[in-house]
Image (cartoon, rainbow, N blue to C red; front, side, top):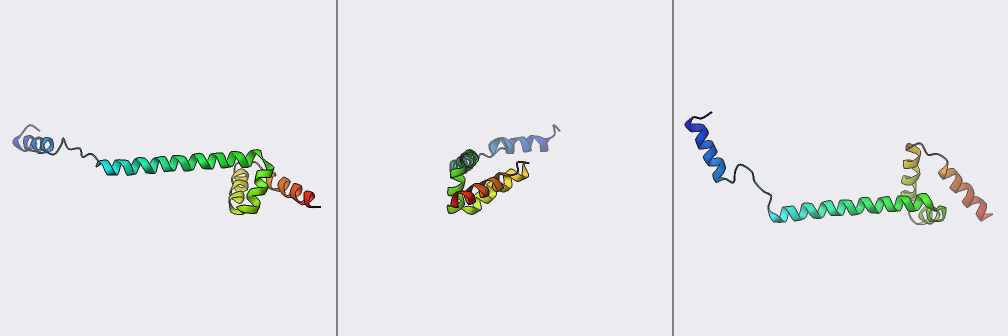
Length: 98
């Protein structure tokens, strides 16, 4: 396409910034903030999982304070094929009460 219509389209594109529009600075900052917030949340979830995975005492604390979070931990382990953690915790906690 080298006709006059193609030249006109190219002229209009170059006048409008090459056909590419950049996001305003505020939108870029908001997007960057959201990505950092998501990364911080992911890191926090990973650290919480590792703490629960390593310490039965921490799991006991979580069971008293945030039982729904501990339930997510147990279910994620069961889905990945790691069974018996819940039962071992319950047996330990019941035997320590007696």
